[in-house]
Amino acid sequence: MFTGIVEELGELVAVEGDADDGRLTVRGPKVAEDAVHGASIAVDGVCLTVTAVDGDTFTVDVMRETFDRSTLAKLSAGDAVNLERAVRASDRLGGHIVQGHVDGVGTVVSRTPGSRWEVVRIEAPAGLLRYVAEKGSIAVDGVSLTVSGLGPDWFEVSLIPTTLELTTLGRRQPGDGVNLEVDVVAKYVERLMASGASGTSGATAPDVTAENTTEVGASTAARREASEEGQ
Image 1 (cartoon, rainbow, N blue to C red):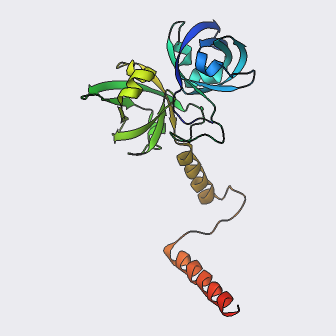
Image 2 (cartoon, helix red, strand yellow; image 1 turned 30 degrees about the vertical axis):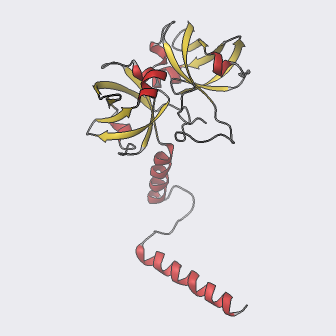
Image 3 (cartoon, rainbow, N blue to C red; image 1 turned 90 degrees about the vertical axis):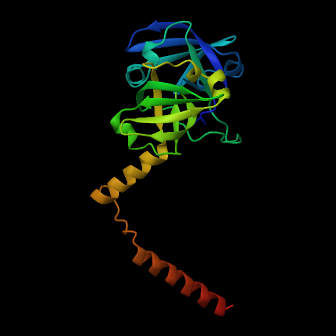
């Protein structure tokens, strides 16, 4: 798991293989310093498993599913990539819960500069926009961002100077693709609601209504009073 707080702007050193079986070698001194075989590192928001470490570089394997759902297939040697190591249980959750499981690719539509910041509009697949909410969180190329605007087929994010300087988002231009990961909590809520409505969960859950919520509250209060009287 990650938090969407990019640790380092790395460089893609080599791309090997093909769309079915690829291998990427990335230079990232900070994330490579304690990397070991089997460690997880997010590359432009994609969770990848380290297969080798050599000094300040590490190598990861990429399968077809990952190429199909992300922008990794379009990367070339020399390209900059956002890097983040997996979060420790003791670390602060500075961004939001990011799995590194990219849901799809969006397209940068426009960039509107401010005095020291920029508003970036991104077109997103319709199947993902239903999980996007204004002031909610979304990961773009692995960067945890707050949605500042929302339209019928797009959303906007406002980028502060640090994000513009220390991540690839400062370089993305209209027409460029970006990896998107929506809030996993929204997806689980949708799945649970769908399962409850269709009865496929294997158990029958009671409907939550104002009436039965009030009944449960009254029953709980009555039990508490009885318990206090018996003490």
